[in-house]
Image 1 (cartoon, rainbow, N blue to C red):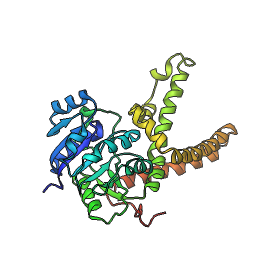
Image 2 (cartoon, rainbow, N blue to C red; image 1 turned 90 degrees about the horizontal axis):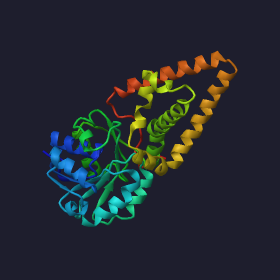
Image 3 (cartoon, one colour; image 1 turned 180 degrees about the vertical axis):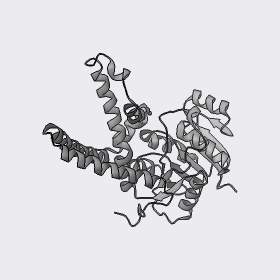
Image 4 (spheres, rainbow, N blue to C red; image 1 turned 120 degrees about the vertical axis):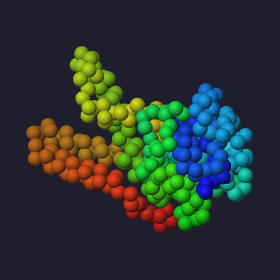
Length: 304
């Protein structure tokens, strides 16, 4: 039995189109509606046949939905909510997929009315590709989806969790603030470093007579793959999660400076100790990623 009767997905990119495919493949929704401001994206959605109805105007479809999911860049969440909420019916649920939570919650909440419940969500899944053609039904399988509702024990939060579980996700609950710090550490700053390293490589091209790109090894390609991700989305992520990103960047600079000093002073013992420790941590991270049990992230109403 479907978790929701009708789901409206606002935004036809990688995540939105993958939700449409996954919800249909796993029978998590009876009807799937999609909206995107771009006529070309809407045409692609129609050609792919991943939605029962498509429109460039989300408000036209919102009245029919009992769940509306905003799948737009973080900086556009407030405007998307403002456009769609007045058309949503009483008792319906609004959610999102943004990788920043505190600022998105503030931007969306000012447009809410009593008949609509907002349950923020973040599926930790993606690729470096974008657009409706890039989506696929198994994107969320065995990936975490973090929910940050005011009341994680509510029926509405439980229902949304079941929707994501139906699409293959593991569920965790966090406070918005804790989510933003955790994701700054595990995702946002790594992306920032990858973008920076690619920029450094480009600057070094003239120095090395174009041999940086020519001789790029697997490590460089693998590490910088994420720098091919949607630049608009990542611009918004860094600006919307500014405080947490800067906190983690400052810590990273301190650690990098310590390694720089060890290299400068030929301190192989410090380097070996650091590399050994981080290798062990990396192994534990990989092992933990293979464990489907929910980590102890805490509950929003009890966490600091």
